[in-house]
Amino acid sequence: MHPTPTIEQPDGRLGVLLPGLGAVATTVIAGVEAVRRGIAQPFGSLTQMNTIRLGRRTQGRAPLIRELVGLAPLDQLVFGAWDPIPDDAYESAAKAGVLDRASHLDPIRDFLASVKPMPAVFDSAYVKRIDGPNTKEGSDWMEMGMALREDIRAFRRDHDCARAVMIWCGSTEVFERPGPVHATVEAFEQGMRDSDPAIAPSMVYAWAAIREGVPYANGAPNLSADVPALEELARERFVPIAGKDFKTGQTLMKTILAPGLKARMLGVRGWFSTNILGNRDGEVLDDPESFRTKEESKLGVLDYILQPSMYPDLYGDLYHKVRINYYPPRGDDKEGWDNLDIFGWLGYPMQIKVDFLCRDSILAAPIVLDLALFLDLASRAGLSGIQEWLSFYFKSPHTPEGLYPEHDLFIQHKKLKNTLRWLAGEEQITHLGREYY
Ligand SMILES: NC(=O)c1ccc[n+]([C@@H]2O[C@H](COP(=O)([O-])OP(=O)(O)OC[C@H]3O[C@@H](n4cnc5c(N)ncnc54)[C@H](O)[C@@H]3O)[C@@H](O)[C@H]2O)c1
Image (tube, rainbow, N blue to C red; front, top):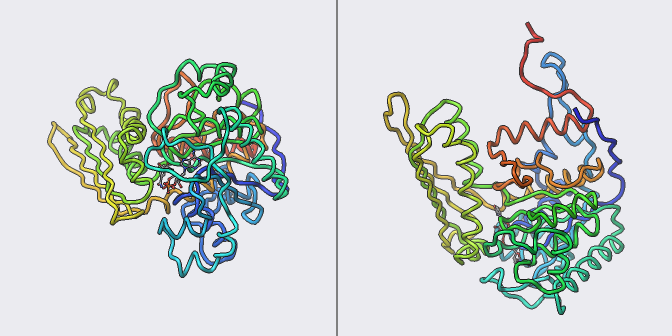
């Protein structure tokens, strides 16, 4: 057992820095303010609503998570953002159309209008369907990375922040695999000076955050900090990192259902998933290269949960297909259909149909809040590098080379809660239960 770390108190303000001021970012910013003003509740957020059982079932000890481990209170959060589109958070939220203008945007209009995006490190080669004038000028990635570092310092100074965290809420970048330039910190920083095309803008943000000692999480499926060079830098600088791709609609359902079917040793022959969505994210994902990044992230899940190589008769022939269709009339109100062809005793076939009429950003916003508070906790506890205990929030959990990710939502949940118990110096809960008999 690793010794329980000492955790610094969450004193002072926490800067929450968001590259990408679109649907998800504005939904979390507006939501936090609505909760602060008492006009709404933070449903979906573990850091705000969840309790955690401690000790034996007979002891009745179940404090709120935020009280057990001491998380930054909402009134200490200050938001900053970057975006190539110059709209402030009010204009962007109004365009995204996620939150109701009369009940949730207009009452906090002044606050939202005060969150203005800083000029972005942006290149439309990596996000084809977006363009905007609010960008940084610079001769290479290193110069732009240094400008981001200056933004971070200036933000912390101007808003009197004791600490900061950064969460990528920007668009999904084109598909890429790690290459030689991502192998070491030295190669990466040389690549920045050479403006190597294998370095994507999200990596420049991740680099700037880590260099500034600011924890970084990636809400999109593109690599960003998930390369050896940035993992190494995070360890060296004692900075926690996590990713990738917020686990929201269809994949959330998949990682709830698949572990249940597997637990009962029910076979799966086919799983067809299709989505319609009409927000800006859907438009970006309409580009085949960005879709490929998302597709890889969505497809990996079932293999890891069902383990076809261990159960070839049950899952060896599984046909898994994922489609995303851009359909503007739906806006952020995505619809995700799943058809599962399963089989049971003696191979008799059955079907399950799921039709999830979800709201993408409504599911993503509490994840951003929880990640901000948990990454700050990790940092105050002296944890650094990949924070696998935050896998619960991601479609493609970031793990070190050679270690497969845990996708099963229930294993992820146990991992999260046991990490919190460990941080608080409490016993792990194994559910063995011999002590009651
Ligand atoms: N909404 C969800 O449920 C969900 C789930 C998983 C992942 N995600 C991912 O989260 C991200 C945000 O989703 P969204 O719905 O808010 O999308 P969005 O299109 O509304 O917002 C993304 C914003 O990022 C900006 N951007 C692009 N490149 C940038 C850069 N280099 N620097 C700064 N800003 C940049 C865009 O201009 C845009 O305003 C997407 O990558 C999406 O795939 C969303």
